[in-house]
Structures are given as C-alpha cells and as structure tokens.
Length: 121
Image 1: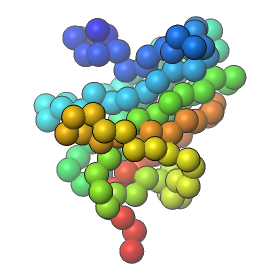
Image 2: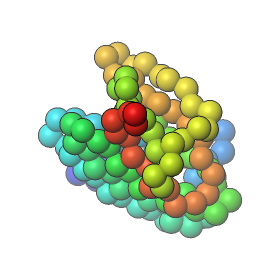
Image 3: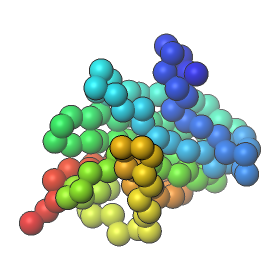
C-alpha cells in the first residue's frame, strides 16, 4: 500500500528492477476523481497525474531517461486515446479484469499528456 492507504501507483517490475521499467495503472473508484504522485528513481523523477470524469480521462505521465513503462488506461467502447491531441496509433492491447477493461501500451522516456474521450467523428 502507498501513502494514505492507496495502492502504490508507480510499480516496479521484477524483470527490470530499480524502476528501469515500471507499471502505471490508475486506481479508479467513484470516490477518487484525481491522483498525483511522483518518486525519485536511479534514473530520475517518475510522475503520474490523472483526473477522471464521466466524459473524459486525462493523464500526464513523466518517464525518466533510459526508462520505460507499461501504461494501463481505463477503457470503454467508443472512446479514443490521444497523446498531445493526436490519436495514438501505437500497438495497444485490451485487458479484461472482472467488469473492467484496460487499454495497455508501452512507452519510452518522456513527458506525455494523454486523454481518453469521445470518439472523433
């Protein structure tokens, strides 16, 4: 568990320890509409800042140099994933966990501004 009883938002992987590669997956609940966290790793500062509403999901992610992350986005049919305003055409896969679905992708180092909203006409 992380601070304040919330699950750890930035999770290391066993395959690449020391936060060389890590997982980011928001903990969405009806009571929690946003979360912001950052941590210092051997490669630099990793950060996650997301905000959720019934219409859209926005997520700013900072992945330090020489690192990578697996990102899991909440998914609903008809929603389009964008980064910096452009449609994401990167390889993604759909993961089902109970009644929830997640859109999963890998990302290299950089600062990303993702939105998941209504599908463009």
